[in-house]
Image (cartoon, one colour):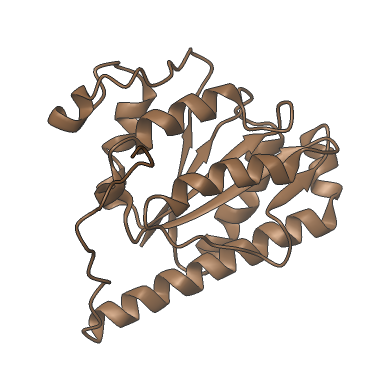
Length: 206
């Protein structure tokens, strides 16, 4: 079982990475493999809705999105982390997730998803809601914790002093490990994944 930790901060070893590291260390204690995936600082273009990825399975823009998509089939759970920018995710992560999730419900379906945000003071719940919507539209069980998945601090050192926030990260990791193991146990016991109806897409124009 493997969890991919996606860092949507421009700072590779900043506050968001500090939260993700706490999750990784806790998952390791539960016997769950993890991999860090930093989006980086190079520009990530937004989705232009061309639809070419629906035919080829990859985006025509060659950047970190395609590198990420290659890892998805062999990943069981995802944690997307971001700093809070104006009560929202980082622009990098927003563009990244738009393109990664577009038209790929079947690729992500039944895999676990969790959002983690880092903020100095406020705006965290709005950013959490933004990320969780990608999971909710993709048939992904959302992993929760004892509090909203957030840490507070202006530096990694301050984040480490957020005792409740760091505990929330550990609880999140333990919950994810438990769910992954439960799904695996169900699979071995012959419990099938939910059967999906063919998607009915309607609009409201009459």
